[in-house]
Image (cartoon, rainbow over all chains, first blue to last red; front, side, top):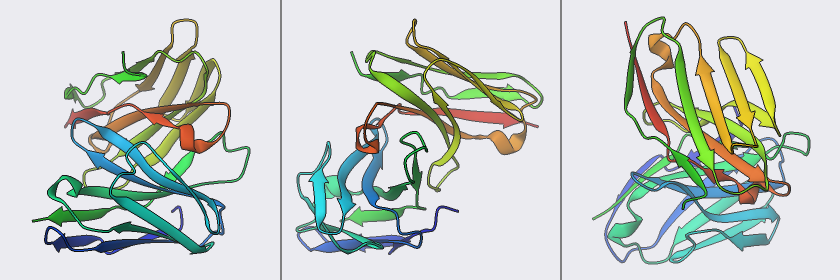
Length: 114
Length: 112
């Protein structure tokens, strides 16, 4: 158990509405990540955070924003959801140095934009 | 050429078979190599982690890295129906985990 909780786990929303996904960790790790996983594309990094208020873009950041006001919480926001953002979203953390850059995933949030 | 190539399968084997899963890569800077297992509708879970070249064994699982060929493998001995999942390879150069690159996964089914 990586100590990661994602919410909501499932959501259906309409095109054009804002959506926020929450990731909560219990182990006080510095690095947190948001990925999306799609058939044919695999796992792709959206944004990541290396500390409170410190975030950076990943491979597929367009249309997404993130915030991290506390160590334990990392929020992913879709400002105006589109059908192309229908996906499963995974939050992840990386454990301290010595873990070889390995990351640990949450259980996922399934988002459908209709 | 994509940085990491992984045959998507699907791969179907009988229970007890030896399974070989593979990835090739193009970036010679990759130093850390991982295998993740992902059950249906679950998050990926770290299965094996290897630094640089060589073998690593953990129970029925063996991970091999051949940096000269840019090729990594995961072997599963005495495969079980509970091994049925999608297996993802991942790798990263020296540096942060934000540089982690994943293969697209191979779907494995072990038939009783």
